[in-house]
Image 1: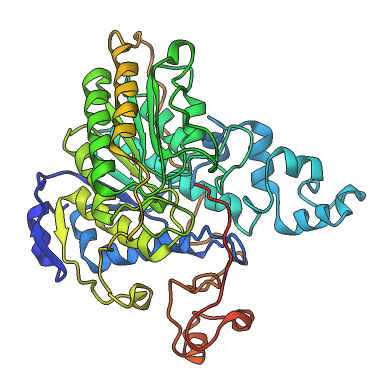
Image 2: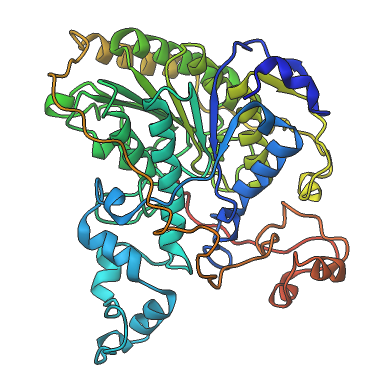
Length: 489
């Protein structure tokens, strides 16, 4: 594996970054991840992960790290956190069965030849699937890939095979033990942390998504072995949790920190708050491993976000945590202006390996998404920062007071270490021979007016980037869409 000094071998890699000390970086990527499709008009687009990976490769960052294809997490792996009935539901439900149930056919006599009975409307409501969390083709395989990457990243860190492990398909922080939430079905973060806890006494979880990391906080609310710290928009905003007074319970009291913020949070304000809180957390809690959720919906201009961070400002959080030289897992999360998500996660990959890429983007398969500037970095919007310094200082004071209540670093009694998560036997899972599913295969999505400037519809059709049913909403310049959903992830 190459070190940071080798950065100049990539044509688009400029000088070595300021924090260029060598790190062994492991990067997990499932090549089919971009094929999964939540449905027409849905803002969550796994295609953004493929776009980010494409930039990573064209910047030659892949030469500076170990690239791994994740093993799909098994049902048993997923049941380490999620309930049996919920996992069974996810692994067996199909869009056709949901359509039948919602059309009133769900109560019909079951088909004896079907592998499992169709879901009932009661089940759909119980597991919270529907408009925000739709059932789509390959849903469970998508969850397996996301969770498998985070579990695999944890194993790399546990075994000392990497200093930093990246899984941009992870970070789905809203999923609960027995239900989907906020575009998230399986909480890969919780599964990754549970794996880390086999080797590490204390794990710190930090969340910079614009939405509160409620699913992870809830999972570890009563333990001191995991501290959760979430920086998020608070108020009339999904999921509505993450009050500054939510601090954990029982053994976990003071081990949950919430940093409630307002619209327009900019680089300077965010950096000041982040560094002050995290520096104290690292001093007091002394984690043996750190997990950073890098939801990119906190970037300026995100379709569902309301912060005003630049790519550099967002990445400064990773840069700061990297400087502590503690085993670090880095995950994705939200992000709905997909060209900016790709920019952000590519740049943060560069930060992880310790290089500073050129701002001018190399030509790549999705180059037209990044017009008209074709640059890696974006300029923040001219929007008001509704976080005034006095309010931020009050928040900082309250949180530092919470941290002062921690009397000592939590310890763990000696006990037998659970076995590592094991990859399946090769004969059980052959990734090259999995049955093909009817997944959305195009690289262009109907609701991406801001993402792609359409110049020639016929060229896009010939290239496989536009499909016949897209033409109803496409004119000669852009795709028209006012499709937005309440913020999730």
